[in-house]
Image (cartoon, rainbow, N blue to C red; front, side, top):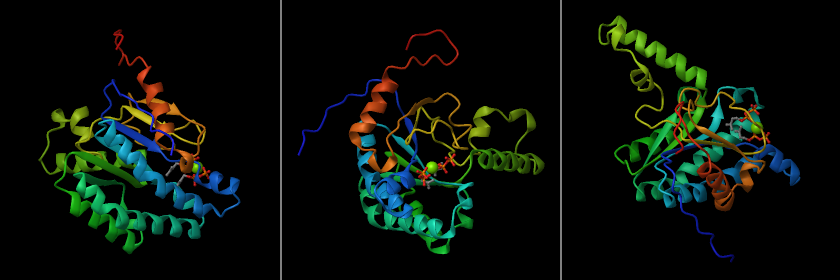
Length: 244
Ligand code: IPE
Ligand code: IPE
Ligand code: MG
């Protein structure tokens, strides 16, 4: 086996968010049905989770299914949900071992009952952990997240629980699915597409974006390190003039 490449992350990175794209194209390239691309994608996930822990990145977000992905054939959706259930059933003990809280961002009530149950099991078993956060964006849309937060806030104001003057960016962020999580520092999209596709719109406000042509099923620790190196060389100014 090849020697494991060493890497030291010296820049602050609390939250990395992935758009795991290119599964279908990966499958096509290998002469396989699309759903096997999703299977392979799930198989490689824990190596990236391990790398996040290795580099002391506390929060990882994964775009697993968007509000727009309902436009796909039902058969592909069924396979995706099945692989997701297998993923949690197989890895939940390991996530617990490393005191990782599973967060599901998105409205899971529209998912098959069996998928909802596995999600609830994963959230419930890990709810008291805080060393790491494994945030799976499932039936997630950034616009839906923002509209939902606005509704929750409006309800609190209407019921007299929140004063209009007290609404600020922090209060707003605390009504998003990602409540309590830090802003995204680094957003990585695989497969060469260069767009956000409705992903964590509020949370990505000052994230660094790294786009790699590698398709998600081929995205491994060494590909991740390449993205981290690129991030490390960025000058994050946050509107100021500092040379971080
Ligand atoms: C990303 O891979 C996974 C999901 C959207 C669920 P795709 O299925 O979008 O793969 P491509 O973009 O068609 O190659
Ligand atoms: C974004 O990928 C959603 C996920 C990775 C879950 P898509 O493949 O659905 O996005 P578009 O259609 O290329 O924008
Ligand atoms: Mg895609």
